[in-house]
Figure (cartoon, helix red, strand yellow):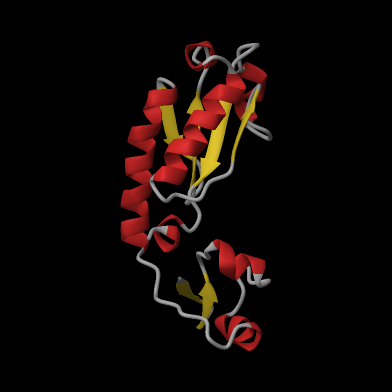
Length: 143
C-alpha cells in the first residue's frame, strides 16, 4: 500500500513477500519498482486503517483491562495480573499471536515491565506488565 507524502508516493504497508524482497516502509515507490518491477500497489485507506486499529483495540481488551492506541499502527495493553489466566506470559503471547495470525493480522508482540521511554515510568507500579503489538500491513496481509 502506498501513501502520498512530500509530493511522492511511498510504501506504507507491506506484506511479508515484499519485505523479504528488500522493500521497507517509507521507501519511495519509484525505488521499490526498481527492485520489484511487478510490484502491485494501491493507495492506503488511512480512515479504514484507523477503524481497523480501533477494532483491534477493543478486541485486545480480552488480554487486559486497559488497551490503547500506541502511535498510528500499534497498541499497548496493560496485562497486569492477567498472564496467569493463560498459563503465564509466554502462553498469553502465544494465544495473542495465534489469534491475530488466524485473523490475517501480521504482528510483533512483547511483554515488558513497563513501556520503554515512557515518561510515566517513574510512576509505574512495580511488576506491572504491558504488551505492545503492531498491526502493520494488516489490511495488505488479509487474504
